[in-house]
Image 1 (cartoon, rainbow, N blue to C red):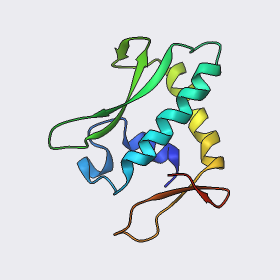
Image 2: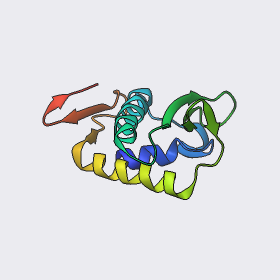
Image 3: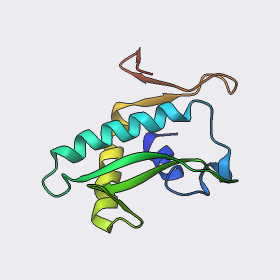
Image 4: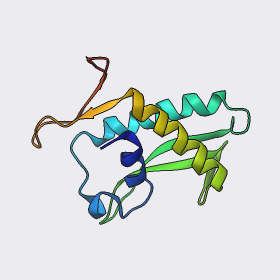
Length: 117
């Protein structure tokens, strides 16, 4: 899966087959939030917009990513916000490769043959 795919799964409680999150998903979420927020701070239109990790309680997917505008959580980001974040992620897909070695082992993120997380 690509970073953009993981991001899409983390946007609602029904992602990852309603909670079947892969091992090591926290590391991938942390990378997504960090890298997207760095790029958003560079943008002219969305300097206050940022992503935040959210651990949801309940029976479904717990590993979520939320949109925030300054100190306000956004229930529904605008289409421009969504497309900007998705474009950032598509660019990051070219830079990062998610490697799933064995199902029983944690996911590793590699960049230029170096393990980042």
